[in-house]
Length: 149
Image (cartoon, rainbow, N blue to C red; front, side):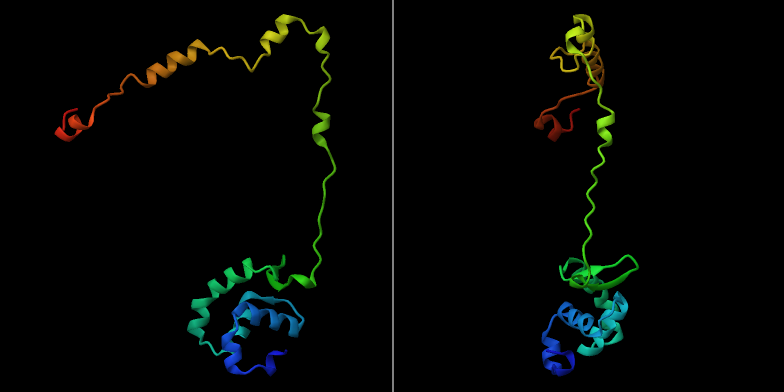
C-alpha cells in the first residue's frame, strides 16, 4: 500500500517509524533525520513545535529499529537496501610475541624467582595495611546516638 492511498485517519494511527519506512521505500533515496521526520510530520499533520518536541524521540526510535541504518554521511536509509560487510582479521600478531622456553634446562633458582602464583604473602604488604588502619575508630550505635566519639 502506498502513502498516497492512505487516509489521514490511517496515517495518524500508524507509528512514525512505519511511516518513515514507507517514505524511504517510496522515494528510494536516503534522507537526513530532520528531512525524514519533516515528511512524517507533514503527512500526519504535526505543527513545527511538535516537530521540534518529538524529533529526539524519533531519533531514538530509528536508532533502535532494526529496519533502519544510519550511514557514514549522516543519512538514514532502510537496512535492506544496504549490504553488511564483515571483516575478519586473521592476522595473529600475538604469535610473534610468544617465546620458546626450554623448561628442562631451567634450574630451580630461576623457577623460584619467576613464581608469580605463590601462596605466600609478602610481609611488607601487611605493614602498609596496618598503617592505613591506625586512625580507625569503631563506635557502636549507642555511642553514635549519644554523640560520643
